Each structure stands twice: as C-alpha cells, then as structure tokens.
Length: 417
Image (tube, rainbow, N blue to C red; front, side):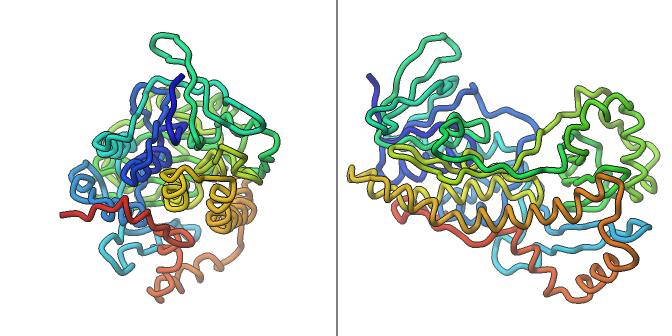
C-alpha cells in the first residue's frame, strides 16, 4: 500500500503549481498525470501578469524568460461596419515589470514547473497514471485507485488529502454532494493556425463574421486562431466546407484582405481544425472530507477573456497558502479546505457573471446573426476608450490580474538571483 501526504490528481497548470509550492513548503506530495508528457496542442497558452509575478516570486523568472514566447501588450477589437481596429485594453500601460501577456506553449511551462519541483525531495510526478476512483472510508476520501497506462497494472495511493486538478472531466464531479451547477453557453470553439505576416497587427485581435466570432493571438510567425461558432453547430458548419469558412474568415478580417497576396496556406483539411466543446459551470461545494477541487475541476470557465488558466493557478496558490502548514503538521481538516473555497469563490462567481453577460449581450446575438447594438454606439464607446487612456486600464487590469492576487506560502519563495 503506497502512501503520500497530498495526492494531486492532474498535472496541468493548477496541479503542477500546487505540487511545487507544497513540496517547497516541506509537504510530501505526489502528482498523478494520466498522459505520458505535456505535449497537447491548442491548450491555453496565455501566461498573464499574475502568473508572471508568481514565477518571479518563485525564482523562475529567468528560466521562464528563456522559453520561446511572444508578448501581447494590447487588446484590439473591430468596431463599426468598416471593421476599424480599436485598442480597448492597453496592458502595456499598466504599472510594474510584467505589463504584458506571455504566449508560451503550455507544455514548456509545465516542463519548467515539473523540472523545478523534481528538485524537491518530497515531490513525485507519476506520468501515465490514470486515476480510476476514490478510496473511501467512513465518508472520507482517503486516496485514489489508479491504473498504469503503460503496463496496465493497477494500484492504490492513500493520502491525507486528495486535490482534484484534473479539469472539467474530473471524477470528483460525479460526486452528487458537490452539486454541479451548469450555465448555458451559446458557442463552441474551433482552434486552428494561420500564417502571420510582419505587416499584420500585433497582440490580440478579435473579428466578427457571419454567425461567428474570432480571436487571433499573435504567436510571431503564425496566428493561433479561435473561431466561435453556434453551440452544437460543428457538424453543420463542417458540412458547408472548409473553403467557405476560410473565405468568410478572411472577409471578416479586412487587414488580411489588404495583406500580402502570397500569404501562406491555412488549414488544408478539417483535421487541422480542433473542436472545443465549451462549457461553463461550477461546483456548489469544492470539498468533502479528504478532498478539495480547484481549477476547472471546481469551475469550468468560458474562453471569454482568456483567463481560465490563470484563475486555476491562483486557486493553486491560495490552496497552498491555506494548506501547507496543516498538511505539514498533520492537522489538516475540513475547515482548512473550506477556507480555500471561501477565498476563491467571490472571484469565480464575479468572473463567470461577467462571462455570462458577454454571452447574453454580445456573443449570443452575433452568433445568431443579430447585432448586439445598433447605430454608432459601439463606435462612440471605442472612441471614448481611445481618447481616455486611463479607461483602457480597466479591462487591461482585469485581464492581467482578475479580481485580485494570491500570494504563495513564504516557505515556497525563491527570489530570482
């Protein structure tokens, strides 16, 4: 029978950050990741200023800066019938060292966190290890059962506390006492790549077409594109043909029409266009005796604002701060895990509330072929934002930091240099 103090299920950003922070604080922690590595394309690759500051606090700023990356300093939206681009969020105007969003392949970030955590004697990362169920004793979660995906062997890992960081497909979501609450989403997302030219805009650019919206993320030599389509319309839209979609996408992006005629090819088949089934929900309770859920396991976020990963990281930081001491001393109880939800609940609810407003008033109408506002109202708003730079800091600050910043346990800090 194997045993650890904290079993972390899932080696995504939340799981790896939590594992690193707890291990540095002297807690024995084992992270179970069902995949053999972190190489999965079209995952969220945005690293926001809140996470950049955390990496600096952990002494990882220089190593992170050495990773291949692109910096996004602004948010641009097409306004009016002509599709003129307006900057509505100037992240570069925010004070401080990290006034940008770093676009870094998520596998590079996770490899960095795993390498750093593996230096701690109390940390263990086990890949190709899929959790199949929870161990239960007298109403308490006491660990997990797992299957080794390489050998097919099974085993049990007992733990003082199990933390579910395994996303919206988490086993914990099947526990009825946690009470999953779901919200309607008007869209799904297609992910794909398009070549980028030096004459193209920089940063994060949004566009609106016929019954779809898109966000284009500047990755240097290519655009990482997300096209929002009506919920459940994937098969119907694919049946209309890839060429038709790419033509409509280009028509909705005026600066692409004015760009070089020899722009490289986009997707050549639907196999290069990946579907994300968008869901937004949250657990009413993130915990039960012996179990805590954080990140997407506790609250699946809409891609609106692109802050889901950074909220999950902040969940992990808050969890480490509340739990490191009790885990190390062997006194962790239900009150400790409840404190994590109390700390993170307001930010989760507020963020999802803003996303629901965006769904109802902007995204839903546009995907149905209706304008969310008539006349010059959007253009006037954009002109006000453009003429009042201080107003552009509000959406920029929210994108950068969310509703607030979490601080890691003091024992986990390693200042750069």
